Image (cartoon, rainbow, N blue to C red; front, side):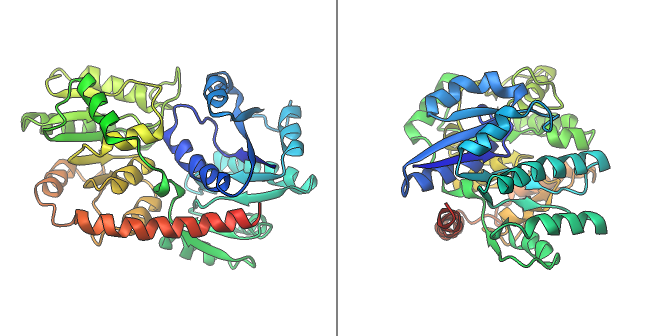
Length: 385
């Protein structure tokens, strides 16, 4: 039996992104090995994950965050008991955040890597986004760390080129995000779910996923989301707000659902406006729901992945190059909105009314090739397990 420890996700329950980064790897390895999975979950989210992990037959261990170097007996024991550690964090070594957060993140990730080496465990990083890796000393430390891996898997050509600039000794591979191979729930399930919410699945549905991450970066995100919603309401369109990362008891700085509820409640006109408040959905359910959208606006990376998978024209609020990398797999024109231009609504109107930039059949054809590329990356991970 292969005992595999997943690290990098603070929670797996309620987080579609974390599920999208973990479940495809598990499903692929399950085809080849008898497996047992343990997930490192932060103390803050531990209780909220117990039942979910029990249902999925995952073991869980507490990650002592933020003081990972203290009271870490359970963390060290989890590393000792497993054969392989797979880091599934979606983005690492982001030099654009504050000095303290940047180095804290580096130390947190490197600590688990160092413990894996100490106890002679295989340590792998699943395909992810890196950087921007700025500052000479930071680059030196990241290079030193990545050179201790058997290989580096990077999401997207643009990001891969930046990693190559580090001059690593180990092989570097470019693969799409693993969540591109996750199958959605059945169409009939989504149709029934939307009907229960009060939506007519035979009519046009506009989806929007506000992002607490972007709200923390850009002060006008809430007002912009409200304007977008009101614009489509004025055209008689059904608008569905889809929170994509849910932190139980989280505020607007840490939970998309709390942010979405605030936006919903703050809008006086509730006609044709709907909100998904269900905290028991999984990634496959939300992906299936997105298949009924006619147009989607998102600040969430894995929301974009799902909409591309389902062939839905999507406009993106981008704060990182990973969005461009994902879009480049399918499109020649990248519908990315800069929230600081004061012309966002006009651009969204143009993208909505003139969709020549989005060829649904072409996207569908390219998806098959993307899935094959993902499987090649997963085969590399399997080869080290």
